[in-house]
Length: 271
Ligand code: TTP
Ligand code: MG
Image 1 (cartoon, rainbow, N blue to C red):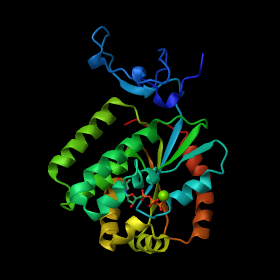
Image 2: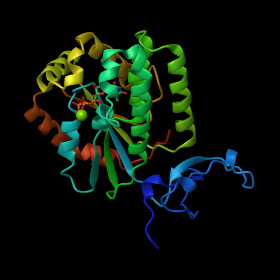
Image 3: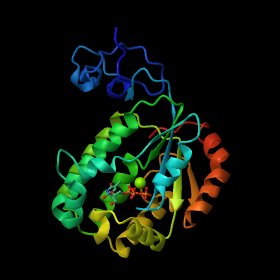
């Protein structure tokens, strides 16, 4: 019997119980919803990844160019941690199209296209199986929605109908699929620092980003993770000030290593 790829297997079961159900390998047959299976009792619970004992998930959050990838690269050298970098290359090239560039050119028209795809790729990252007991990921499905989609709406760059459709998808996903996060590491920067770093790294699509855009994203992050005044926070938050230069940041990560590793092994939080 060939081993089933865990990343595509989902089964409907109460969250955090051991998996007892056999699921066919490599197909979407593993995905069952009580609502659609006439002969099965409807089980209260969420879809969870199959065959995978509960692993620790840490999400690294922060403004554009706040240093998330550098932070992940640093922790990738720690045994027991597996790092999932953001699928930004996919957002720049999906079957030859570049929805990221299109969104920056015309957010009204292409915001929903980009954000729908980002939501899918983030869901995929949350559900991807990793060998290590701890996974560290760049951002999450939550910040894509609570920060970027919200920003498009609030700045008048997303038609309300697009926002509503994206929200319906997001609500369905988070209601029906278990996406546990154990710790959020928030790299807190000033928008000015991010603007400087952005100019230095010179990603073609991002040349049009003004300081005001980074200020809006910053404000939304602060409301979400510091004030707790906007959307639900799915896990405890560890704030790391991240305006310092690279070498000092690496020291900071070292200082926080134990805190990150121990905090993430405490109580599990499921949204
Ligand atoms: P980031 O997710 O901030 O990734 P980064 O690599 O720029 O950050 P860091 O330097 O800290 O590693 O953004 C990638 C690009 O995608 C950026 O142009 C913002 C854009 N984006 C959206 O437009 N919508 C979204 O929902 C997300 C998550 C990103
Ligand atoms: Mg990055």
